[in-house]
Length: 254
Image (cartoon, rainbow, N blue to C red; front, side, top):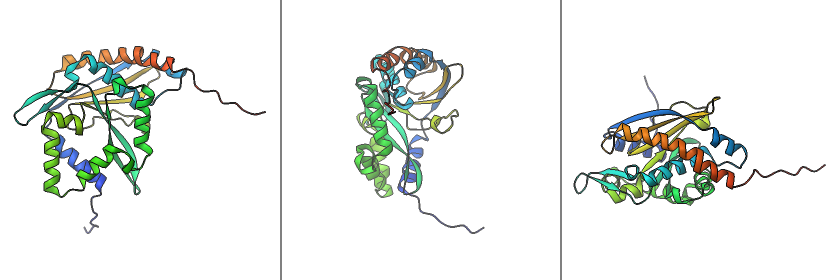
């Protein structure tokens, strides 16, 4: 059968490189439905941030007290664990570039120290701003334009030195298809932690999946992290939403 050869665009080349970098990571996953009634009540009475921003800050708040969630596995100069001083989130941003749907990683450093509205603004900026106006997008596109040998080298440096892992890939990623109808997503990245969430269910729960590099930690700590994540969503995040004030009221002329 004769087909038509098509070049691989830069965004798809990025995904190819990302998948190659993720191949050797021994991921395991744990999922649970979190009861979030207090959070939903707070969102109903305030101008809510997006769900991606909510999970970015909530996970970073948990990681502030759980150093293992800020720990990456690095191979060079020898295999070691490297603990980052603060969380660095990598958020999967769905965009359309030159008529092609693609995903770009938006980097957010120390989200636990940011206002929830500021985290949300960073994510929205990544969705709408030109690639040239988003520092992380410019950085990753420069690397993706390199010839294959240099591209492989840049990825190897970013992946295998602990300090560079924080700069390039962060300490955790957030990815979801909830905005497109939901579904249990099990994304793949170089790790070490990936958080995904679904749609809010009628019983006021939301399904959350955490995938992690098994070299870094085991299932029991992650089970505790999910419990703590539920608590943070319903307390600290909900309190911040309530403190932010009510939704603005639109004045309608008569």
